[in-house]
Structures are given as C-alpha cells and as structure tokens.
Image 1: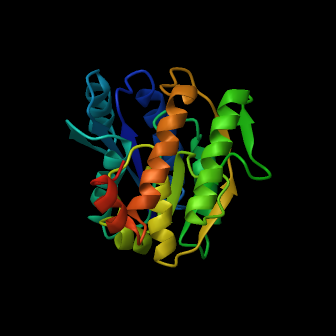
Image 2 (image 1 turned 45 degrees about the horizontal axis):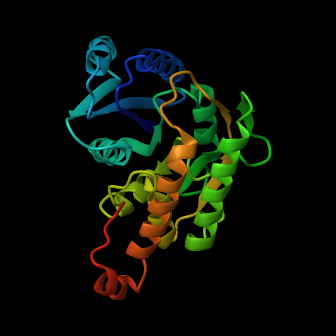
Length: 256
C-alpha cells in the first residue's frame, strides 16, 4: 500500500522545514519496515518568501518528496493540484492532505491510515470523543467553529462535527470520482469536498485526532468568521436546484 500526502504551502518558510523533516522521517521508517510506502507532494502556491528554497533542498535529498509551484491560487487550489499529481502514480492507493503547520503530528496522520478500513475516507476531528487538543482553544475560536459546523450540518445535512481539521485521507477511487467536481473555494473547500463525496455515496469516517495550535498561525477567527459563514451559504446556493432562479433574481453566484 502506498499513500500520497499533499501539503499545501503558502508562505510557510518558518514551518515547512520542520514539517517535512518530521513527516519524512516518520514515513521513511514505516517504508524501511515494509509497512507502508509513501510520497509527499508539497504544493507551493502564491508564495513570496523562501518556502520554495527550503522545500527544494528537501526534495534533492529525499526522492519520496516532490513539489509543485504555482504563482496563483489558495489552499483549495493547491490541494486539488496535489490530488491530480498524486493520481499520476497508479501505486497511490490512498491520497490525503495535511496542513503545513504540523498541527497534526505524523503519528496522528498514520492513525487515520490505520483506521480507514472499509470507508471511502477518514477525516481527523478535534470535536469527537477521544480527541486531544493542546493548548485549549479560546472561547472565541470555539464559538466560531461551533457556528460554522452548525451551518454545515443544517445546510448540507452532513453529520460531521469538524469539517475543517486539516488532515484527511481518501481511497484513490474517491478522489478519482470527485477531483474534477470540486470548486476552487476558500473557506468552504473542505465542506465542498466532503459534500461532493457524499453525493457519490462514499462513506466517510470521522476519527478523533491529536491536534495542537502552532506558532505563527495566520488566521484571525473573529475576522474570518463572517467570511466562513458567507462561503458556506454561497456554496449551498451553488449546489441548490434553485440556483438558476436565485441567479436570475440577484445576479451570478459562483464558488466562494
């Protein structure tokens, strides 16, 4: 079995080196024990710092690590391009992604792999029983997350308690079915991905994870909250049978 791990990287010079070192060493150890083969695909997008220089050095020394570099696009765009690259290798039976900040340590990502079993995919969750989150999240962040997840449940009829945790793995056939159907969204990318998978009738497991906020976090959740909510509402409209009627009344509505 071989897993492709996609890591989107936008201005990650302060964190990407440690992430590649820890993920690379962990999965090399599994490969050497003939437990699991792997490749890591870094997708650099719209970066103005030294991320590419750092990543390139790792790639030169580690054949299991490769990278793509795009001058445009956000996280969703980067992940989709990473998925497409992963599909080029027929040996990749599992394809997933993880955030560049190593909030999900490699052993927690491997725990997802071990528990995917007969599911079409498995997503890490900070809000199901058994999850370990350190340090404890602020009240503001918890409130924003809960409101966002409430909207997801109500608007998309999906049962997940945490759609936004940046660690997800899917069977190859799942990605093959949905990769060309996912919109290039920002805040709603994960929701769109899971919703498209749901429409294809694949089962997704939500699994408790170990997760830690890291230094240099780029998100102000109080400012991002309204944008996240708007993205979800727009995504619901885009996927609604009433889309044409709404567009006729209010103008064009596209992916957020």
